[in-house]
Length: 279
Image (cartoon, rainbow, N blue to C red; front, side):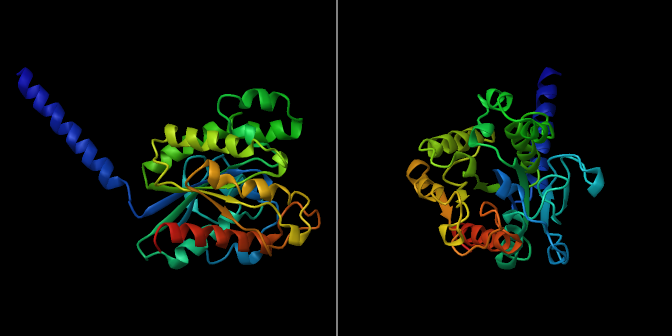
């Protein structure tokens, strides 16, 4: 009887494994995105951004948004806003659209966006973020509260949900304005990237990190000097790639991109990712 029970448990285990493998769509490409205001989406999205969004482009909602009819941990067609309930247009919007324009018909793209305007990269350091938040202004603390006080933890939580449905293919980063001229930025990013690899059981060789430049000097970007540091990221992370912001138009503050700038930058993220995936 004991042996029969062992065989029964083995069969149940094999069936469960088979079901999980079947339920995960290998053609559902998942991308994690994080950063500060330019990844969060500062420009207001326009009518053109909300129509004809392919249902194969999905967002995994990272917070509850009753105003949008969305709840945390569920997939929805990626109509903006893609970060939180009242954020704006982000590079991720046109990243997904540009990806699908070149991917096969049976492919889908899913995105998760956990970003906080004005934050330093230290906010995503899972071992030291609490001390950073404690010293932060109230407006930042209030945004962090939307992620139950731990944006990195929320990103990992959502990523694990996404892994049941598809395959994580890359990570999109746009951050640096709050760390302008910080020579240790690349090492701090490497720490976050490494933690994501470990916590999600990912292989760095298979999951590239794409980092976008801040508003370029050709647009009068007030943090453009940071782009020299961002340019060195591939020296610290082998599978990192820098996305140029040259020519991407910006807002009057010379800190944030405008809607057109976000659209172009998002397409550039997609062009690089497509080439890395062999498309």
